Amino acid sequence: MTRLDRRALFSSGVAAALLAATGVSLEASPRQGGRLRIALPRSDDNLARLAHGAAYDRLTEIAPNGALNGELATGWYAEAKGREWVIDLREGVRFHDGTAVCAAGVVECLTEPLDLAKHIEATNPMQLRIELEEARSDLPFVLASPEFAIARHGNIGTGCYRTERLVPDRQYLGQKVTDHYKAGRAGWVDTVEALVIPDATVRAEALRDGFVDIAAIPKDESLRGHADLVFYPSSENMALAMRKSVGRPREIGAGLLDDGRLAERWWLG
Image 1 (cartoon, rainbow, N blue to C red):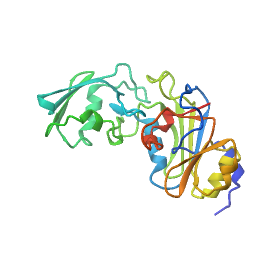
Image 2 (cartoon, rainbow, N blue to C red):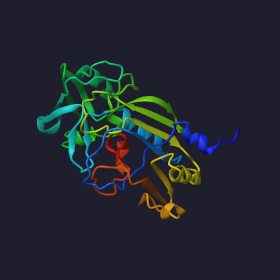
Image 3 (spheres, helix red, strand yellow):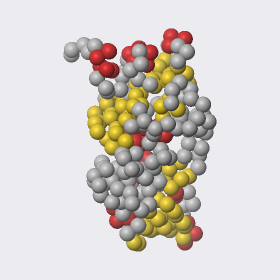
Image 4 (cartoon, rainbow, N blue to C red):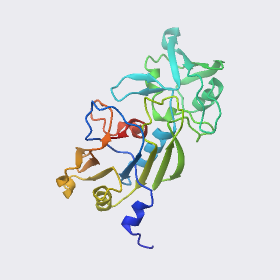
């Protein structure tokens, strides 16, 4: 295999994405624009999680502060003591191929993965009803899970970022969707770039030399002497290192992984 020049690799515009934290004040307001670049190790499906969170929405989402928010759903209520749920959909949302989101399409997306459902049907163009095998008061929280992403034909989403390039276990490039329904609330950067870099030393060099904004590196890495960087522990042996220009929303608990929604929630100061 031909040995690649490290500087040429990163200057090619391909740079990485998923894990992160920030040195920007948690009180700072998000800023629009820029290219968020993050270097990932080859483990735990980090690249796939990032791409999934960037490209797909769900009916509901768990916000960084732990609150349950509507995403493609604008409202929901239980009937029959929690065995039936009625969900109202957001008007005017389109998949990345231009197709409008409607109840019939959402039913198709949910019929197979939602195995706890007895029956799912569209009651009108923008409303669906879910009949469960047994009562579930937590169904709106369940629907925020990644496996319930709404994807046309299994791979066309409605997320803040349209996938321009995805090479499994190697590379992801997402471009912000213009006039997205979350505009002003999420999707701050123009471009999210992701590259899996197995070698921790190369990831550290990429961060040090300014080719990426965030990288997972060993806790004992010598980069700790750089004033422009901040560090957060992510595991027993690894830390997340990032430039102080990277911003993130206030989070609860350990939350540094941000359940794969980093692409739409983080920004560059």
